[in-house]
Image (cartoon, rainbow, N blue to C red):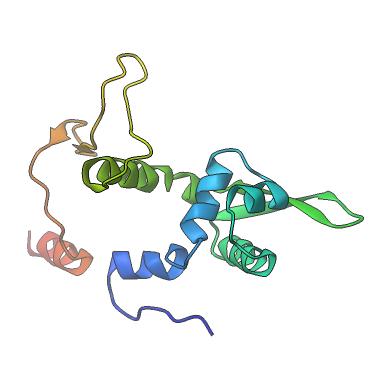
Length: 150
């Protein structure tokens, strides 16, 4: 049985879906264009076929990927990311930036395609479209309570 976090926290609940070993790497491979089981397995040396099958099945159940049968005999599937899965690209980019700043051996960096300069993550106000310098994490319950007080 899968161990899950029973904590009312976005991070904990997200990790319940994508926090198992290999899971983010599988999603990353699909994002990089490896849509077939054998392509994903080849790109991730060390993952067993059974574990890959389990992770793919779970990601489909959670709405992160979709499967499409492309061969009936034997049954073979193509895996693609849902909108939810595609939005994990921002998580990968953040991890790439973190790694380029903190790993002793850096494997990748995120750059501006036009200039080649490294980039960083910015937070944008969804109403104004402006970059925000000061952010705060608030509980959704607190936010609802503040709106009710007004």
